[in-house]
Amino acid sequence: MESLLLVRYGEIALKGKNRPFFEKSLLKNIKEALGGLEPFNVLFQRGRYFIKISSQHRFAALQKLQKVFGIVSISPVQAVPLELGEICQQAELMLQQHFTGPELTFKVATRRANKHFSHTTPQINSIVGESLLNSYGGLKVDVHNPDITINIEIREKEAYLFFQSFPGPGGLPVGVTGPGLLLLSGGIDSPVAGWMALKRGVKIEALHFHSPPYTGEGATNKVLELCRILAGYGGKITLHLAPFGEIQQQLRQRCPEDLLITLMRRAMFRIAEKLAHHRELGVIYTGESLGQVSSQTLENLTVINNVVTLPVLRPLIGFDKVEIMARARQIDTYQVSIRPFEDCCTLFVPPHPVTRPKLYILEKAEQNIPLDELLNRSLENIKTRVISATVDEADFLFH
Ligand code: ATP
Ligand code: MG
Image (cartoon, rainbow, N blue to C red):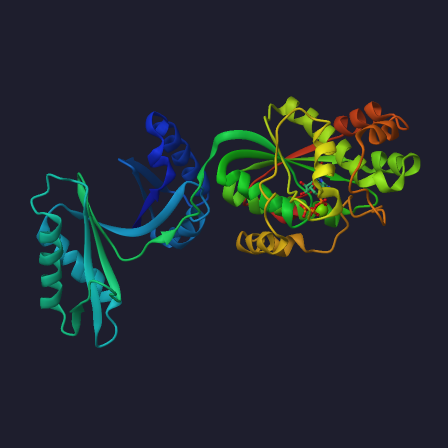
């Protein structure tokens, strides 16, 4: 048996002359998201996507589509020939499945995109409504607060009937903006920042700094798992793993302790920018939120920014931690983020990190270490993997 899903978009409708570009991107993303549920067929028709898929995959398809940015809602629909008798018959059939109790209130809501159809919207509502009332005792009309709404869409070639709409995530199709580089730690914030980048259509690659042997395989697996979850929203994610231990060691041995976090961040940003240029990524994303920790004061953010010329976007800048945590739960990254593994930044945390750093003091401290050499060595030893939403955990290891 085949099922039919009707997919609607939101903001794309406002895109004027660029609309076909957005529609094509969404079509591509829908097909990618449904990968593994073949065979299916996606048809685009005047602002709507119609997906034909085997009924056994209907639920899985719905779940995947609910994560595809650009989609605002999805309805499982029944297609009917453009003829009022057929529409009434199908409405009766569909109602049968829902009519379990002795009484049920309902309304018929028609959308008539095809203005050439023989009947007007109020006529269709009342004819279909009456035919249902004639077929079922215990059925009552309630236009304000019905138990069930029978939706009818009259389009060019067929009519579509449905009872339910499931929300999509909204936003813009991934790939219409960007691409950008996400600084991804194993913490709670940066995966949420990545999700927010994807939501506005930015295709992201991720960069994670690790410090073996201080940080173990557990920390790396956390980041791989986070990428896997993000890939469920944005398609495959290229993850770069950069060694950071040597830089941390040198900074710790040769620079003032209270500057360590700020100096580490400056080193991370420098590596990120070089990688971004190499990968042709136009923007850096981080999970920083103003004032959340001492390294995220306005002064610290300023001196950290100072080492790069690429724009740095911080989608969480105005969020409280509780808001970020709620979003992390909603997008399923929270449980992974709270797994207790050391991140390279939780090592060597000074008791009193500087909150109002002076640029010249940082620059002077950086002269104590062979910075360029260390940055280049980290860059040369980056390992890269492409993570898909369906990658097996056993397959996580970098080679
Ligand atoms: P998060 O929960 O994302 O780790 P946080 O509140 O713990 O954030 P910090 O540890 O100060 O904040 O990190 C600030 C930002 O710097 C992170 O959101 C992330 O974008 C980046 N970052 C921190 N550690 C790493 C890392 N090991 N690899 C890549 N990026 C990192
Ligand atoms: Mg962190």
